Amino acid sequence: MIGTIRKHSGWLWGVIIIATVVSFVYWGAGPSRLGSGGSGGRVASGDYGTIYGHKVTQEAFFNARNLFFISFWFRYGEWPDKNPNFTETDLGREVYVRLMLLQKAEDLGIHVGDDAVVSAANELLRQLSRTGQVVPLSEFEKQVLQPKGLTAQDFQNFVRQQLISEQLQQAIGLTGEFVTPQEAADAYQRDHQELSAQIVFFSASNYLSSVAVAPDAVAQFYTNHLAEYRWPDRVQVNYVAFEVTNYLARAKTEWTRTNLEEAVEANYLQVGENYKNSKTPAEAKDKIREELIFQRARQDAFNDARDFASTVFNMDPVKPENLATGAREKGLLVYTTAPFSARFGPEEFAAPPGFAKAAFSLSPDAPFAGPMAGPNAVYVIAYGKQLPSDIPSLDQIRERVTQEYRWHEATLLAWHAGTEFAHTLTSITADHNFASQCNAAGLQPQQLRPFSLSTQELPEFAEPADLNQLKQVAFSTLLGKTSGFATNSAGGFIVYNQSFLPVDQTKMKADLPRFIDTFRRERQAEVFNQWVNLEANHELRSTPIFQQLRSGAVR
Image (tube, rainbow, N blue to C red; front, side, top):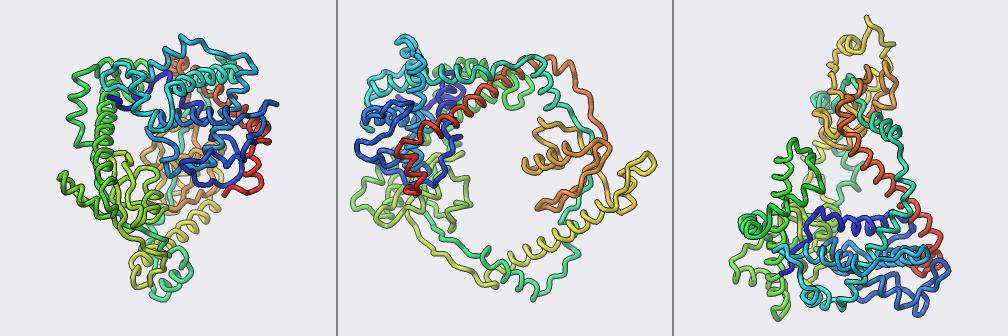
């Protein structure tokens, strides 16, 4: 009966904003592991610190902890103590910031009425339903809350706290809304004024043919970079994948029987016709429709994976081979990953966050993990094999070392050529322009498509990091001048700035109302985030978690 949260809920954005802002707070120490029974931050018995001069009671601490657990569940569909990426220290920070926000709201006299709480709670419960109807609170309590020791009252307190936090954010961030039309127009011009520029690339790939590959040089390169070739600790796991594509037809049928078009319209009103660069309202709605169907298919895949995992995990005796046994009974295929490290994860598929960490925590005695939802599938995994760290011999990886040696040498050649050419560039004149100087040196300059600080893609710069480097270099170079040689892993480039193009005033006039609204929200969030940083680092100094972090007691 209970499905998954639909994205783009207006009220839910408040939940996300309040939960996200905590991550901006700097505490300054490493994380510890989150224990299922931990209180968060290893609070000493009876000592929970003070906030704004008010002593934090044990009851208040655990109430805030419960509220955060519910918030986390609504954001991720799982409990924080089941997420391998979430630590006890993370929990302690979240709980204390939540306590700080609640106390500040109390001091400011911010309260919400019962009618608002009921309305917001019903909206959240409606979003959990596959039929669009409000899930009965008793059913939500039974299926979701009670297994975690939580109650319907905890849920109602969570909703009330979220509404209070939203009002607090609006009050604290109020100054961020004070944006004049002229200030917004100036910001729009700054972000959208396009630059006309030429560029010349020095690509390492063009110098590969000039690199001589001598066996001694390759061997020396291998020796010099020996640490880089060390294989880290690796594991192999067996897994069953519940592919989302296999559930799309069923999800589409489920949606069609209920209120798909109503949901599409509701989401469209919130995200607008330009959703994901859509060119028409119909295109935006098509994208929303596809996402809603995909989300439901993903939830269906998760539900089947959960049922399968329950069967496998409950087999007696517990052993890794139970995954294959359970899969055979249900006609499912079991796959085995190639060895992978904790840093990079498996190569066979786009693994969900926490997959590698969960895989490395497996053992013959605790052989299972999951279900874990990735971008395209949900996975249930079992212990396979552990491979300790080792340095392969040159013969084992000679091809890789040779390729990396050639690329390294070619990159150095490209850097040298780019630096030398930058030194030879003379003043740009009508008769002695950038293009003529490039041609004289045997180089091929290119005319870039006009771009601005808000440009998201250029054909010549496929990677966002590369495009950001271009923006940084180009917009810090004067008009009519050439930049210095900018190096990157592919070689480098030199930019010549020709001129700024006038902003399309008609488009600016049409975009400005939405831009101003976004600009004000960003300012408001920025003001609130800055306030949370300052307040947390000042007001939470007496709390146990902060003191443990400062002393290095938490690892």
